[in-house]
Image (tube, rainbow, N blue to C red; front, top):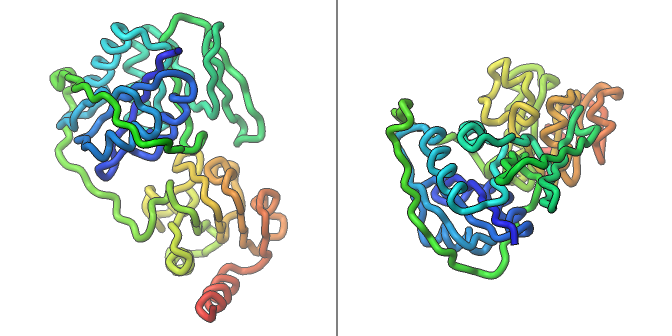
Length: 315
C-alpha cells in the first residue's frame, strides 16, 4: 500500500475540518499518517483515528511561525519513511510549509487540486480553472514523495469506526524560524463557522451600504446560519475579511446559500458554486448569479428580506 502523509492543523482544540477532509481522502489512497500541529488530546487522536489515521506525528504548538521548522521536520520524516504522497490544504500555514518542504526535498508542488489519484506512473490531479467552468488534468511522474495542495471542500470528511492511532512526538527545531508569534486573536463570530455552516446568507454591493448588511445578519440568525460576503463589500470595509467567500476568501459548500444583492462575479462564484441549493435575490434580472441559482428572486433586497423575515417570524 502507498504511504500517505497528511498535514492537519488544530483549530479550537480539535483537528481542522480541512485536515479531516484531506485525511479521509488520503486514507482511501493508502496507509495514512498525520503530521499534527497543535496541543493535541486523546479526543483529537480518536477523531483522527476515526478518519483513517494509523499514525500521528505530533508537533506541539510553538511560539514561532511553523513554516520553516515544520518543513525541516517533515522533510526528515519523509526522507526516512519512504512516503509516496504528502497532502496539504490550500490554506496559509499549509502553503508556507509545502513551499519550504518542496525546496528541501527538491520536489514539484501541484497546487489547488480538487481531486487526486496515485498510480504506478505518478500522481494525477484535477484542477478547476476559469472559475470552475473548465477542469484541467495534471500529472507528475518524478520521484516520490509527491506534494499536493488540495482546495477546501473538495472531499467530504467521513468518520468510520472509532480507532486509536499510534501517537509519536515530532521534534521541531524552533530556532530555524526567526519569526515569533507575539499574540493571537480569536476570530469573532455569531453562529456557526462559515466553512462548516449548513446555511449561509451572504451579502454584496447590492445592499447599498454597511447598514444594509443588518438584514443579512438578521436572516442568518433566524435560520441558524452563518453570514458571508463578497470581496467588494469586504474591500469597502463593511464587514471583516474573515467573512469573504470567493477565490481570495473562503470556499464553502453549505446545504443552502442565499445570495443577497450579489451580482455573481466569477471571483465570488468560485467559492460557493458547489452549495447544494443556491437562492439568489437581485433586482437585475440579467445578473450572472441567476445562471447558477436553483431559485431566483428578482427584486430589491431591502423589500424582499423584510418580507421574508416577517414570514419566518409568523411560522
